Structure formats: C-alpha cells, structure tokens
Length: 95
Image (cartoon, rainbow, N blue to C red; front, side):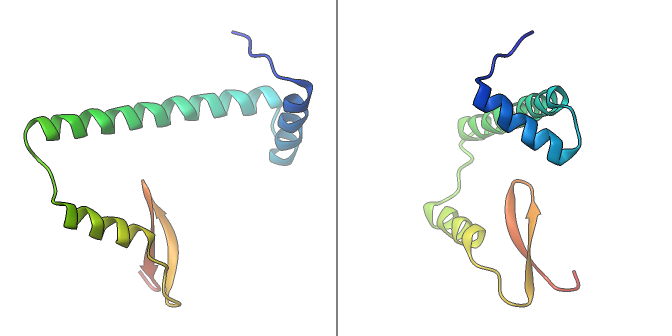
C-alpha cells in the first residue's frame, strides 16, 4: 500500500519522526494502526449503546447533565488531572 503526501506534509512528518527518534514510515504506520484501534473501540461502543437503547436502557437527562458536568469540572488545587479512558478526571493527591 502506498500513501502520498504533499512535500509540506512529508516535511512535517520528518520533523515529528526526528523528534520521536523513529523513521517517518514507522511513525505513519504506528499512527495508522492506532487510528484503526481507536476506530474499532469507537464502533464497539456505538454498537453497545445501540444494543442498550434497543433494550430500553436509557439514563434520564438530569443524570446525563450531571455526568457531563463532572467530566468538565476543573480540578481543585489538591487534585491532579489524570486520563482515565475515555475521559480526563481529577484524582485527589495520594490516590
């Protein structure tokens, strides 16, 4: 398989690859594989959500609003932002 890039895109890839200490081809391959993995996880999550909806498993709007607020609230000074797939959460120091 071949992928064609503009000279500007190739230069950008070369800069990133140099910074990361890998060959540009390896950088592109790794990125493509990560994209496929992320896409597979996304599609599985969508299928799971559709199956839950088909079974009538929903959450109320208020519950969804509360979840979104928790996801986007700023961390307090005693908390550290930590990535917990699929969201960023605040974790109290010492935990």
